[in-house]
Image (cartoon, rainbow, N blue to C red; front, side, top):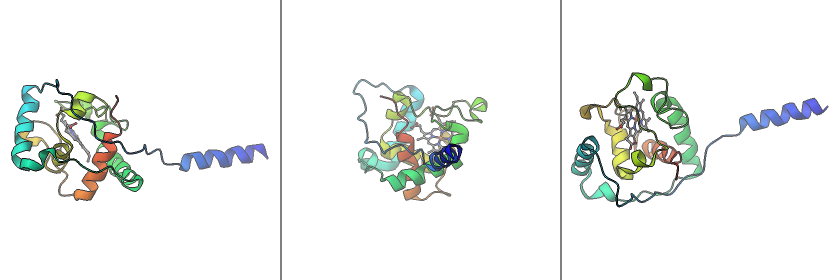
Length: 155
Ligand code: HEC
């Protein structure tokens, strides 16, 4: 009997979605200095997005976080790693390495809108193997998956 109860509990816990709660945006530290590579990307993003570069974005709902999780596992984890550490299966072959979403510098060097734009248009022309996803993901998908990556950041 106990075995049955344990088996049922085990199955229930497996079915639970390990999706973290959505996080608010964290302000970029005033003393954060961009290196030359990141500066070029920031200039590009500011040119593309103009004033909207610094617009704030809303906090995702739980449903959007679940959608973001599914998209992330399918399209991003291979490079950025299932836990966002930039250590996916393909990472070893890439230079620069896929960003580590738990790292504050990497997560805060560009604005939220800027990072969502990177997901849309990629960074290929900046010499990084970050593929453009605009063809596969609409703006809602990009918001969902981006919100999911934000939950990886470590204070
Ligand atoms: C083929 C490997 C690859 C895949 C797949 C990939 N990325 Fe990237 N990504 C990279 C690389 C390489 C960079 C550049 C790292 C750097 O700038 O230091 C990058 C950079 C980024 C950046 C900008 C840097 C930052 O942290 O702000 C974001 C945001 C990002 N990726 C999100 C995603 C999301 C979301 C997905 C899935 C929809 C994804 N990536 C899929 C390789 C990949």
